[in-house]
Image 1: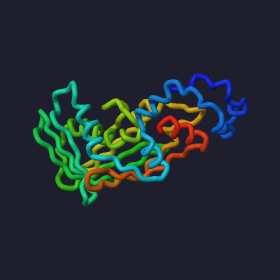
Image 2 (image 1 turned 120 degrees about the vertical axis):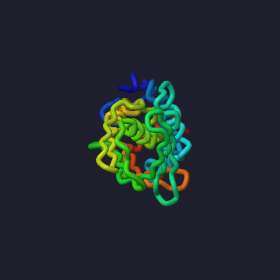
Image 3 (image 1 turned 180 degrees about the vertical axis):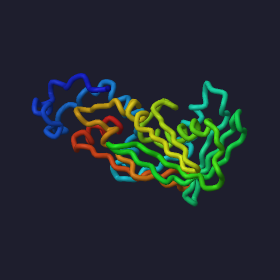
Length: 228
């Protein structure tokens, strides 16, 4: 777990007892490994949007994650998504096993909180073929949808996919906990647990996430300073 190694001499002793006692007038603590992880995960605008409750994840960002996940494997040569104005998600793939796959999905559920991290997609345009490559595809699509908020995630690690008819449930809990962001502990503040995602709605060209990020005021100022 990434935990800042030390506090600077200028930091008052009371800060060690409660993060709420620290004021912005003291020197910024050395965040060690935490600072690059936060910068790798969020820019300042995303950090502010998470707190305000709306984050747009561009299709380009999702598709870049998917393209990266195809490296060093030969079973799938293409995997992309397109968020559509009718609030559906189009998934396209080319596979060695069953050829071309084109699906239209609704995002029935997209939730992350202290209790669970679950994404549920409903395929609306056709019956899903019975093939294990679909679990592989939906695992990566689900992780790609979350990566703008949680930073780099190991594809295929810590993901449980359950397919029941045309309903696909993807449990990404362990993958998020094992991500770099999941290891951050900033003076007792753990962003992976402070982050909530309540829903995801496809809109033309992006996925709109409804979010919340609980941040103590002094931590908010500290993180904003590093991201700014």
